[in-house]
Image 1 (tube, rainbow, N blue to C red):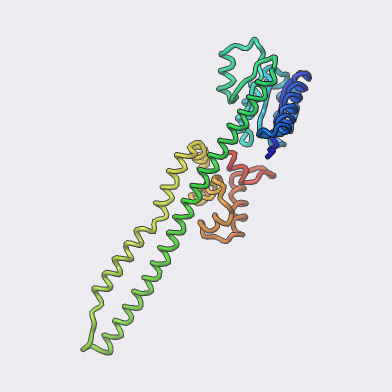
Image 2: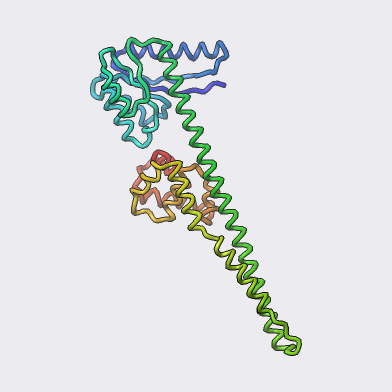
Length: 303
C-alpha cells in the first residue's frame, strides 16, 4: 500500500532543493520497485522561510524540512512561526544544519520545536532514514490519539445510553406509583371494609425510585469525563479554559468535537436535533470569532 506524504522543503540554495527532491524521489521509486513499505512524496519547494510559511498555511503538509540560514525568515524563525500557528504546530520539523553549527544551537532548535536535524553535506541514506522516522513517529502519534478519542467517545456514549435506560425506568416507576395511588383511593372510596394497605409497597417503590435518581447523575458523569480528558489531552483542556466566555454546554460541545465525535453522536448526547448541530456550530464559531473559511472542527482540533 502506497501512502503519499506532502513534504515542504525550505532552503535558499537551489542545489540543496534539487538534491533533497532527487533523494526522496529516488527513495520512493526504489521502495515501489522492491515491494518494501512504500512511501510516495509530494514535494513542495520554498527559497526562504517566509514563502515556506505562506505555502504551509494554504496546503496540508506532513513534514517540514528547513535550512538553518535563510533570508527573510531563517529556520528558527520558521519553526517559531509554525509553533505559533494553530494549524501547523503539530507538523514535524527536521532542521538542516551546516557543519559549523554548535551543539547548543542544535539544542535551541529542538527546544523551539524541531524533532530532528540533518547535517550538511546531506547524505541520501541519512535524509531518507530521518524523513521516514519522522513520518512513522507522527503516524504513531495519530494512531494513539485516535484510539484514545475512540475510547473516550465509546465511554461517554455508553454512559449516555445507561442514563437513557435509567430515565426510562424512572418514568415507568413514576407511572406505576401514580396508578397504585389511584387504585388505593378508589378502594378507600368503594370498599372500606376490604381496604388493602398499599403504603408498604409504595414505600418500597419510592426507595427504588430514589436509587434510580442517584444513579442518573449526568454532572458526575461529566466530571469523570473531564478527568479522563485531563489525563489524555492536558494541553487541550488547559487551552480551552482560556475561553472564559464560553458556557458549560458550549465547552462540552467543543470537547466532543475535539475527540472527533460525529454530529449524530453529539446530537444524541446533547438531546438536540441532528440538523441543530450545524446551527450550534455556527453560533459557537461566531462567539469565538473564528475566521471565515476555517471550520469549527479544524479550529478545535488545532488546539
